[in-house]
Length: 398
Image (cartoon, rainbow, N blue to C red):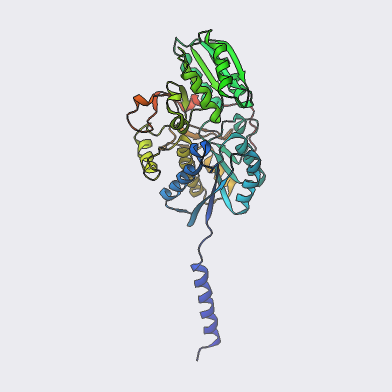
C-alpha cells in the first residue's frame, strides 16, 4: 500500500518532470521589410529575412538556452503602416526589430522602439536624423547614412585633379536637396566649383532628366551628381550615362540590385557603397553560401548587413545574459568588431551609428563582367574613422 507521503512525492516528481519538459520561451526577431517582389524587396526584403535566419542558424539557433525564432512583416514600403507593424511585433514578443528599410519607415519604428524601450536596427535607411536630431537609445543605424555616402564619394572624387567642375541634379524632396546640400560644400572646400544645381520634380520622368541634361551639358562639368531614389533614380542615371557626357556620374545611393535590374544604364557610375559581395575572401565565402540558395543571385549590402547585425545582437545578448534592452545596449555601445560585412566596425555610443569602412565602387559595363553580378570595381577603401562624420545634434539619453 502506497503511503500518503509517497503519493505526494510522486505527484511532485510528475509536476517537476512536466515543468522540465516544457520548452523555454523563444527569443524573437521580427524583420520588417518590403516583401512585395519589387525593387525594395530586391534591395533587402525576403533576402534580408533569409540572411537574418542564416545568422541565427550560424550562431547555433539558440542563446541563453532559448531558441531564437525569426519572423517577418510586410511594410509594403509605406511609412504609415510602420508604427502599427512595430507595435504588433513587440506585442507578439519580439525582442528585436530588424532591417526596417527606407527612411520614413525607420523613423516611425524608431519612435515606437523608444516608446516601448525595445531594440530596433535599421540596415537600409539613409536619413541622417536617425543618429542626429532624432536619435534614440533603442535604435541603431547600421550600414550607411546620407552624410557618410556623400562625404566619402565627394572626398574621393575631389582628390582626382580632373574633377573640379560639378553639376548636381536633385529631386525636389528632403532627400534630394539634402544630399546636394551635403556634397556641395565639400566640393568647394577642395577647391572645386558647382557650376549648376538643377532641381527636378519629386515624381520625375525621363523628360525631366532630359531637360536637366540640356541645362548642364553646355557647361562641360567634370562630375554630375544625382540625388534621386527608387526607380526614378534608374531613369535619371540612364539618361545621363547614355548621353555620352565626358563627365563622371555619381549618385548618393548605389544598390547592386538596381544595377542588376538596369545593367548598362549604370555603367561608369562611381559612388561609395557599404559592402560588396566580392570584396574579399570572407565576403565572397558568405556570399557563395547565400547565392547557393537564391538561384544564383548575389546578396546586397543590406542583406549582408542584416546577417552581420543579427550576429552582433546575439553576441550582445549572450554577453549581457539577458534580452533586456538596456543590458544589451550596454553590451553593444562602444563594441568594436570585424566580420564578413564590417571592417573596423564599432557601435558608436554617442549617436548609435554603426561605423565601418566604406568603399568607392565603379560600375562595370556588361561587356566587362567576369562572372554574373560582378558589377563593381572597388577603387578605394575609406577607413571607418573618417567614413562616418559625427553630428552634434544627438542628445543620447542615459
